[in-house]
Image (tube, rainbow, N blue to C red; front, side, top):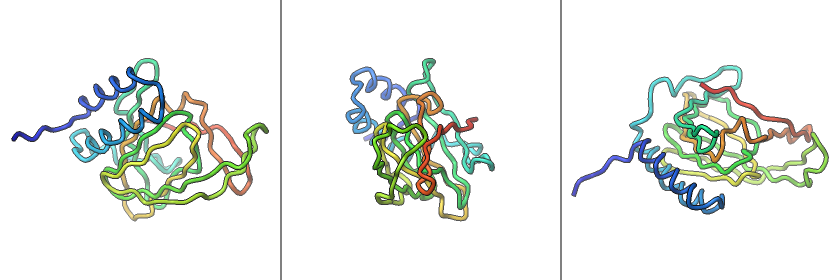
Length: 187
């Protein structure tokens, strides 16, 4: 029996098929998660430059694929040691698979109704460390933060329904109880 490699090109073809068949984010993340896990474990797409991080934001966002209309976006994201991303939503469905090293995800629950601009009351709602080959998926409104608690750069494979800088997504400060736009620098 021949072993078939599952490439990034294969993944993108399957991603397009799934997105064409349904717009339901729950169905999409259920179907995309095992495929993202598979391509993350194959690592044929992983390059040395995917370990490069922006020291200002604490992580590097490396574009692997994006449709012309900014949908079906795939990134390799690298995380500096001791750094991460603040609590944020995505404004679109998301699937993340571990590639190299652990990634601590902290989950947050929003208590207010979002009707007051700039205000958000978010509280800790659990956490889990994801490692190589494990996946985590998010619906557009769900909030999490990410931390690399190791002493080396880690990398994860991210898939989104739309490019993050086009979703109107937010970052949250649980102490100050604020909500503000969250735009990332990409390479």
